[in-house]
Length: 319
Image (cartoon, rainbow, N blue to C red; front, side, top):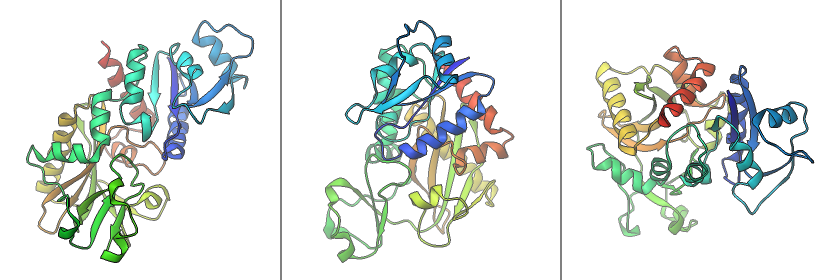
């Protein structure tokens, strides 16, 4: 199979995206795989490119060079032209257009097949405010969203509305501390003290919950992507009842968002075993420290098979 693995771009999460793409490309060893940076400008030399085999040969020979980065464009024409020649594009994009639905919509317009969920479900899930309100309509608890600073109860949480990987998320403990931030750029929520869990869904298969145990602070960007800082327990050491309720909640969110291929949803469970939805991810990370591959492995799905399953389910969208 001829596969382009897309990564990078202008998103703050581009470095995570790059690492994910490397892992995916290494896993697909039996395929013809090319990794491309979304806003890279690629030089074909003086060759007239007619098929993927020509591009792949240049790539193997180190002659498909990314000679520049276009800081103005989200995706370059040369990347689109190469993607048109592939059987499928594996999206290892995180944040920005790679996860807000715009890239998926563009690929749809260009009749380019890609992995993962469609543009609409990506757009809804990355919008933290919208997704939280949607989830609250199906009986799943969500943290209270403060609309007026006069009702603030500390500690509380602020988070950007459209970022992943916990970028920009802060636990604010005092009134003085919150004054440092322009709250027009953040959602302000109540702080839920409890245990944090994440549950992946691949097609109709719900993976075992993984618990993230943090000794100090919260599960921020640094802790997510620095090996050894947090303890991840999978399967989580929880009651059968809580296990079932977490899985049911994850599948409910998956279906509600309209996800067709895969997702990973995060919850906090308080001291009374009440489950609170935190956020859902339409393109889960595939780095060595990412949660979805760890959950899949517990279910007997190795990393290579996980990547292939994502491709298989994605191809089914187009049949």
